[in-house]
Image (tube, rainbow, N blue to C red; front, top):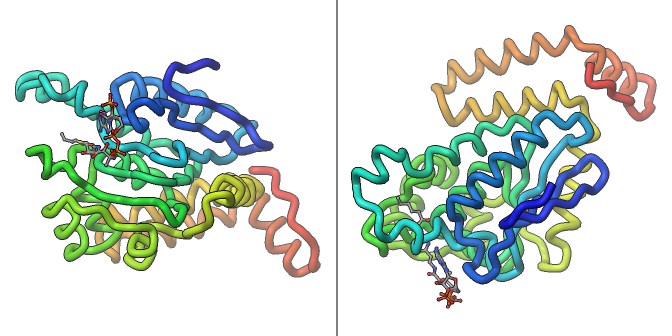
Length: 257
Ligand code: HXC
């Protein structure tokens, strides 16, 4: 598989996707969107892949949607063309996907990182929703996912002022799961992805589905959904194996059944 704006590397059961438009700080143009959707679609059905890491360069995860590509569009263009709707496919990817963020994750870059299941960042990472400085607002979920991740106060602060927050602030307000040194970023993200890929993919898929639900519905509905999925896992061989392995003090061997 060869792409103009992406690099793909496979490490065991982990696919590492690197955004590769260094000349534009990985700005997300329509080619990136189309290629990423295409690649994730293939990885979705590839049984050899259990988890994905999405990363950028040391300077930028992604500096936003491509402003030069959007600049001349008018309302009718973006409304009838449903600009950015293709990104919804990325949020709908069903395998675990970790964003490994170094440098700028701004606008659509921050939104893309938030579409992933969790974010591991370097100390140099900077997150922000600077769309307000361009006369627009976040258009790929920034007002919704950021607010759910960090709460109203921080989300309003970032979206209304357009300021950037550093990795430390992003971790302390819950946007980022882990902060690591630059040289450890990929290693840490791949190790986490490998660990996830080693568990029962049935249970992993259900964790992703049900934690994601917490963002979409009331606590009561979310808890009910969680309970039903939890019950359903008792129909799997992996549940029997996982619990037997614990009792027998050995490592579980999951078969994804
Ligand atoms: C297109 C971009 C870009 C972007 C950077 N570049 N960000 N091109 N779209 N989002 C290009 C620059 O034009 C420049 O190309 C090259 O990348 C290097 O960028 P510099 O600005 O020279 O780098 P630096 O001085 O280090 O500043 C880094 C930066 C700055 C602070 C990240 O590039 C910046 O502010 N970028 C825009 C960030 C932003 O506003 N993002 C949100 C976009 S809107 P040349 O050819 O000049 O060398 C969005 C959602 C919109 O994401 C939703 C609304 C519907």
